[in-house]
Image (cartoon, each protein chain N blue to C red):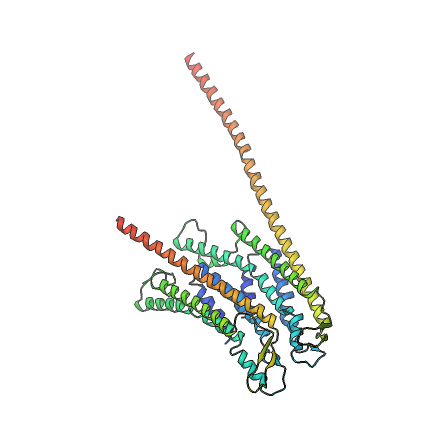
Length: 219
Length: 262
């Protein structure tokens, strides 16, 4: 079980997506998943070992690290990637349900089970809204947990058992900050893509509906 | 998900590339990605652990390391490779779009469609002309831009391509100025120069491919212009022939009429 599973999952979703949906998949693969695996993971690899406090008191370093990093950036990033990719499964399940129905009734109920119309359109729209919502939730979580998207190189810690206030130094703060900004930028790009796909689909199908009604009236 | 997945994605684009494009792809995978994964990552693996400063002051090493290496070489190369490979996706998307259109035509039963079955459409190789030419050329242009930007960023951030052995650091909390020693500086310099050299070769290949595509475009245009000029001459010759024949017919008619009348 590894990121390859997510990659296969998203490739499966690609089949039933619109053009903008396919661009979203490409952005998630190239700029988020690939960057995470090849670059970001290694930066945070030894973050606990390299976190250094100006004190010899045993336990102080551990307690301070735990206080300032309740959930590590890299774990939040991984969770975000997984959560944001999962709503697309709704579409895959719905298409599978349609195909199953066709098999059971042994006749063609749909012109094309994979085409985005009828119930599948609503499922697709819901998945888009969920994706966007989750992206925003994670960005807000990042912002709230770490007081913005900056990583300081020094934090002052005075939790027991540290006697008084102690200086603690974070490793590679600049590099981590660069990748954090990269994460935020790609997240925002994905939000923009999702919102444009949402507007495009709503617009397309409202026009279709309107034209159908207009033609029915004329008849 | 790793570099292997990128290989799968870009391998599909290979079919629709020019020969220079195929060479570029090979250079990218063998001399850049493979070297990065197999060798360079090991060299930079222990970069912070073995970055040693001549002080016992806690935190000084962290701060100095962060000051001299805002973003590690290895991460910069990984980002460069990802950005440089991304424009090829534009071509892949365009080809997929064309295939989708052809499949739609085939399904509708369009008689204009010359394919016998869907498998043929899937395996077909598209020629680089028309709108695909524009997509392909823009992808090469973007590749060039990204390569140049990253090379400049590298040069700017590290003041050249050499890795010094010793760095003097006086960032707080280091007391006064402190000597810090980089691990494996010569090996890192060798790999840096190697990666820069291969980057330059890739830039040259991209420039050559761009020139080749432009030359092809202008040649095709001049051929078309040449063909359209020739056709009027043909028409003139045919017209004069027809005129001559008409005159002969009318002369013979007149002769017959005169013959009858007399």
